[in-house]
Amino acid sequence: MTRIVLGVDVGTSDSKVLATTTEGEEIGSVSTPTSWRNHGGTYTDTDPEALAAGVFALLEKAVQLATERIGAVTVEAIAITGMAEAGVLLDDAGTPLHPIIAWFDPRGGAEILALPAALIEEFCGRTGLPVSPLATVAKLAWMRTQGTDLVGRQWLNVPEFLVHRLGAVRASEMSLAARTGLLDQDSGELWPEMLAAIGATADLIPPLVLAGTPLGRAGGPGVPSILHGAALTVAGHDHPVAAVGCGTTGADEVFDSFGTAEALVRSIEGNLDRDARNRLASAGVNSVHHVLAGRRVLLGGTKAGLLFRRTLDMLGAGSGDRRSELDDAACALEETAAGHATQGIKVSGAINNDGTLRIEVTSDAVSPAALWLATLAHGVDEAARCLDLMAAEIGPASAVVVAGGWTRMKSVRRSKEASLPNVRFSDRSQAGAFGATMFAVHAANVAQEMFITGDTGANSVLTPNGPTAQFAARYTQAVITAPYAVQTRGDRP
Image (cartoon, rainbow, N blue to C red):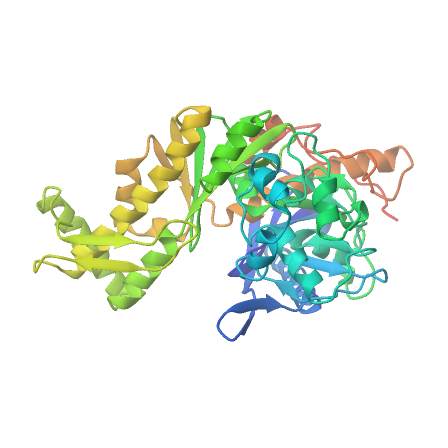
C-alpha cells in the first residue's frame, strides 16, 4: 500500500490534480476544463457546487490513475491551490449566496471607486494591490449594491471553499486573503475601516492561517470514500505555489509563468514599506503575502499570452503544423534580418489592464513571420517594464525560470533567452499542482504529529503551521528525508 498525496490546481482554464508519493515522485495527473458561464459577453461566473463536484470527481480519477500505475494506494493528504479573488459568499447556514464570479469579471469596478476617498488613497500602500475590480472587496461591494447584507456572511476563496467542502474547517490562507483588499500588509490583520465601508464585520473572513496548515480530514456528503481520512490544507495562490513547485523562491530569481495570462513572480524575505508598496501597486505590481511564511511576493503580469493567441489565430496558425511552420519561419527571419525584421510594425495591448491586440503597419514589407516577431517583441518589452519596476525596489534578478505552454515554441524561448538573465525552462508539466503536493506533504507531517499526541482531528487552525523555504527547496529537489517525509500514519479515525 503506497502512501500518496494529491495536489489540486483550480485554474481559470483547467483544473488539474497531480498524484505524487510523499517523497515528491510524480505518479500521474488528470485534468478537466474549468466550466464558466458567460452572460452577454461581459460577465463570467460558475456554480460553486458544480465546481466542487467536478473537483471531487477529478480527485477520484487521480486516485484511480495512481492505482493503475503503482498498485494499491492510500491518500495521506490533499492540498488545493488555484485562482485568487474568485470565491463564495456563504450565509449562516453555509449556503452560497452568489455564483463564483470570475476574477477577471468587471463587476465591482464602479463600486470600488465609490468607496470613501480616504480609503482609496491609501489602498495601494496598505493592501499592496492596485485599485481595480480584481480585488475581492470590489465584488463584495457589488454584491451589497444587489441587496446582499454582508453582516453574518463569510467569504471563502475558491481553494478555501473546496477544502471546506471536502470536510475542513473554514479558514482563510494568507496569500489568498491578501488578494481580497481587506488585509493590512503591515499588521497582517483585517482592515477595519474597509470592512466598515462595505458594511461587513471581522467575521466576514474566517481565521487566517498559513499555507500548508492542516484544517481537518476529508469526509462527509459527496466526498468520495477513497479520500476519507486524508489531511486537508489550502496551498494558497496559484502563482507563488507554482514558483515553489519549480524551486524558484530566491530573492534574486524570477518565476515567469507564461500561459494565457503571464505572471512574473519574485520572492523576498520580510516586507516592503508602505511607500514601496504604493509605488508598485500604483504601477500594477502587487506586493503581498507569499505562500511561504515570513516572505512577500511581488507579482506583476502581462497580457502577452492573450495577444500571442489572437495573433496566431489571425494568421491561421493557431495550432498544429501551421503554428510549427510559422515558428520556424520566424526563427529563420530573425537570423537573416539582422534586427530589422519588425521594421514598420508596431504591436500594443500587452499591459496587464488591457489585452486588446492593436497592430499598426507602416511598411509594405510585412510577412506573417515578421508580424509574429513584432508581437513577441512587444511581449518582451512589457515583461521588461514590469520587472524593471520590481528591480527598482529590490534590485535586479540574476536568474529566471520560465514555465507554461508558450515555451513549446522555439521563437518564444529565443525571445526569453535574449531578454532575460540565465534563463531556465521548467520541465514541470503541472508546476502549480506539484507545488500543492509539497504543502500536502507538510500537512500530512503535522497531522501525523498531532495524531501521535492524541489529537485525531488534524485541525491546526488555532496554531497555524506552514512549511519553511528550506522544506520547499528539499521537496522540489526530490531529496526529502526524515523527518520531512511521512514515516508512518497509524490508524486514522
